[in-house]
Length: 322
Image (cartoon, rainbow, N blue to C red; front, top):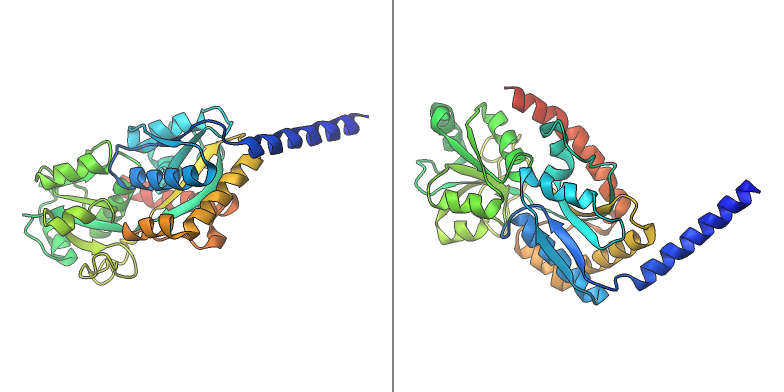
């Protein structure tokens, strides 16, 4: 009898979930971007919002909730009502590196969310103030070692992709500079342009317009191949530091307990949007790499989060201990 009741309850719940998905969304949806406007996370979040809005006929509104390397906004996303009306845009920093960087992290990246889909991977770029007396990655490494005590590194908060990327760079060179935190890539870039800091490591789309404008210098891209957007900028391997290989993932997450039917619908719509020129071309123009279809959806993103936590935790712990 108990088994029958349980079965009936399960069927009823499934019916309710499917009905919710069919009617979803019937009002505006918030996408929490855990960094200030203007940076890679913000721009990626707005592309996601546009894809979902056009396909589902409701507004998907980006809300920037910056602070603590993105963990403030992601904590809010984890604690939101799991009804599909609050999503969050997370990445390598908030959903992997934060585990090692924040001992009292208020959420578990691999437990407290329903992964929806990987959206993009964005190779990082080492950019320096325009009057720093270096022109190559090798020259930067030499200069950094000689001037370690007065070197200032900008980042978008502890646990941000810019912070993690430069941790890997610093470890490869063998330096421990002064780290200057900001609330996002936009403020960090402004400081770099103003000459208030010496360098930053960030996904290519953040520094790109400033490199093209000549207000900062790009020394290396942290991937195995050059970017078509900056073809004259060598890879980190070409510059002699293959260990500096960073292409952070960006993905969409819902709070744990969000109906699976809603998660699946969002994943399906996002995947179709990434196949269309409107969304795909915008990401590619920003230097991002769009994942193949078999790497999209809840399961691949969930697996990626777990694998990145396992990969980054020992690296970050070792780098932080030096």
